[in-house]
Length: 510
Length: 83
Image (cartoon, rainbow over all chains, first blue to last red; front, side, top):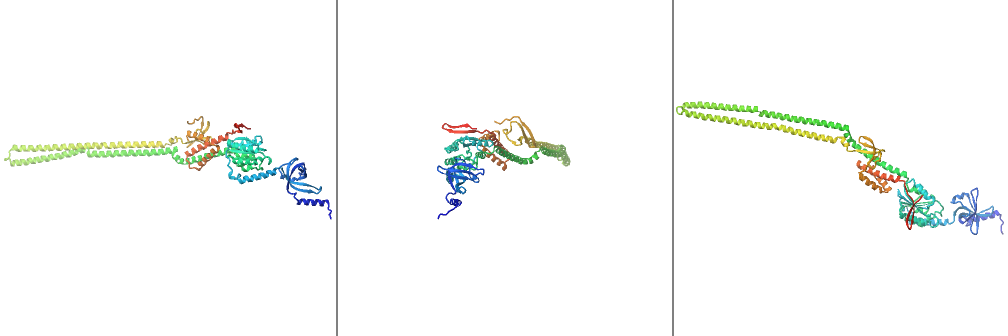
């Protein structure tokens, strides 16, 4: 027997049936019509296809699950479950999210290609090429009519100066991928430092060309690094995965590729200022070493030193003088002694002695003579009778002559000896004079040599050789005429201070 | 460096890319900072560093950049100003 139930019971049973049937958690495709959005934020509409229609509701809380505002005529796929509305007994499709039709297929294709290229290793980090730090030529593959190229141009204006070469290409629709591929290949032939492939935001279909395999392969094959800048930050494309760098947006791409210009300039300046400081340090270090010398070479010290040396010289000269005087006086002394020893007076004495000896001899001779004559007389007397007086006389004469000759012989020997003494004496007398001249000559050339040494040590002469630094007005060292300003002030830094000078003109060698 | 050497180096640097000259500059600065160079040598390194700096600066100061649209046709490559 058939049971009888209330409408409510029926609807509850149908509701339960639907809960357990195959009408839950599925995608339904169709077209939106009769869309009404209530103040509550809920959307009520009909999804229909050629033959049928179903009432649908998208509650306000689910709107956030989808990326577009639904409107009549949209071809959509709606995800949700069928449910019965008990009050009217009508069933409706409760939508939890919606997407444009065909997107599902695109997603599948996207995932499939992504997986395949990933397995091929096209996304490997090791394939990523480093971007040039300071590119001078940037190639951009994008639409020439969109905001993208202008964003890139504007953003790069304040950055490192690089030329921008736009290769106009289609960035959506049929054939877009081919123009992007052609653009990348053309830029490889043309020669740039980095390539940007870019497009503004859009739906998955809009961005689809950047998910095509030929684009991915062209990016992978590019010899020039490629930066992908497609859509918004939340959009990911195959191009992003395969490129060397993914930029969140086209504006971001310009900022990533080109360093800030003033930052770069200050980097360069900081390098040169580090170089300047190092040079300064080296200079100080050298100056420290130089300082030791400098103390010695300071004008005051040098003068002191010179005085000391002059005093030393004076001392030396005095000593030289004294020793010359000593030598002279010694010479004189010796001379005197020699003179004394060999003086004419002495010779005369000697002569005198010899004369007296002679006299003595003469006396002895005469005594002998007289005694001989006495003896002769005695003998004469003895033999007076025997010998004639004439014979005795002639004998005596003979003996007297011999005495006389001996006397004159002795006298001439004495005089010769006196003469030889005189010659030796005069030779000795000349020697001290020559020695004195010699000593004087040596002393004076020694003084000359010392004077020359002193001249060499004169600090003015050394500084005169040009140990100084030329600095620019900001104090950095100028080391060539080329690095000097054409006019204006420069500093001169010498060992003892600084000076300011003005450049009125300059001329380079050669 | 004498005038001739300095001019020669300036020409050499003129042919360098910005990247080359800044990396050269970095090397010279590191060499200076490492010490062990005498004043003459340091001065010469500094002179070279200044030449490199001037080159970098001239690149940075020369704000002139070209913005061109390039097309490849059967007749070859055409460049037109783009703005």
